Length: 544
Image (cartoon, rainbow, N blue to C red; front, side, top):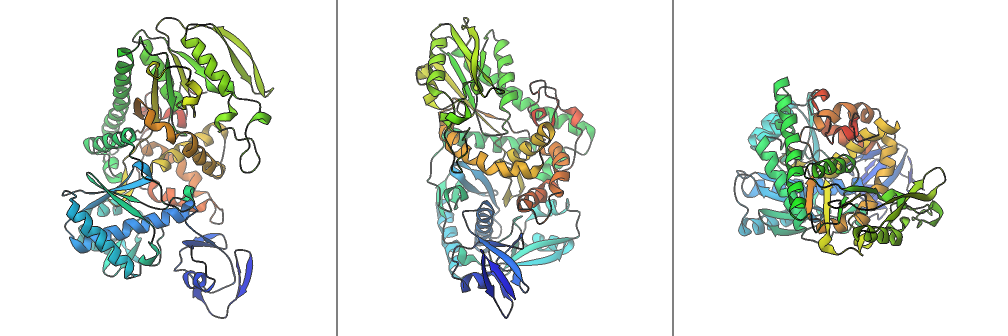
């Protein structure tokens, strides 16, 4: 058979697995491969002519396979140490996973024993094999291992068969493809971090390297509060969230319960700003894509108006330079997410002048001409702070002429602590991606494949320009709504299911489908008119 591998042709006489083929070719960094455009595990057998491309940890898919296999091995290790203990994984600070024991405390002694067991399993090079069983058989296997939360998820599955992964006599499913054996897990780190420990894994955006640990206290506290909230309302797993959708009365209660959390956060934020209103000259709002910044900023404006504070909203977009003056990205195109794409000096000067009570002629960016033109002359009234929102709003360079004690920084992000089951958390990034897909489809008639084309660039911009400043926030607003995937799923699923198998984005689309299909649906007419969710599905009074 004739194989085209990473653009080189190789002829083989006998079938062999992708793993053996990678070894034969001395490709040491392979995590998975695409075969004729379709994603395949390294255990996949090549028996016919094929076009093959091996991929590593510098790809998002490779990173997710590695991370899922890590969770699998830690779960296996704890099961071998003490099958009565239940481990739960949650995405946490510093690009890590937080592992906790649900039915007991995580002690230093247990942590050290667990690490030793994990290392032993890795050194033994234990095979991880995919098996296909009926739902009935899977239920029996999960019952034996006391994984009752997985049985609740199985009940939501329409198909009669289940793919599981077996290693020795241990079985589990991590909603992901897996590595063929445990010996691949040579690159990870951990840190004891009450109430559990953090697991650091190679990141694709770092070219397969481990992230440096940064103790993000502000962001970490937001995740902690999100976890508490999910437990209070019974919204920590898909199965529990679906219980809120069974009757219209339950739907009404659940929607309003979640929206009340947003209202309470706004009231708390309004109180904090009111207490120091005489000192505050500028309020800055920043957050990653699809956090709901537009709706939030308008609702904050109204919240402050109700307290006699009259913020002046200023659009940072009006300070863009013409495209030919913007920095270039790696492809030589204008990088409009770069801070230098804005006229930093002019923006900083104008904000400082306004804060000092001077009249300022604000520019307006004329998108037809592709440049700024003169705008109105404005002056701050008493009790009228500046309110700005944008990707660079928390970047000190833009407001360095205003003293720190006169600024109030707000970071907004949907900090979900939602799980498919105890071993499978849903990524905060995936929630934002689904929001973005739905919004792009609604407002721009953009197919999900085009959104996915842009997503890696969006993420690079977030890591470079947003996340480094999140710890400067005086307030973190959690824009997650625990009911939102009960609404977004019915909009997103038809488009995700329509992505062809041979499309380069099928892998991501299929990953999202794997958990979205488990959510029930609720009546979207129950959503309040000022909800952040309407910014994505349409009908928001704050969104054009």
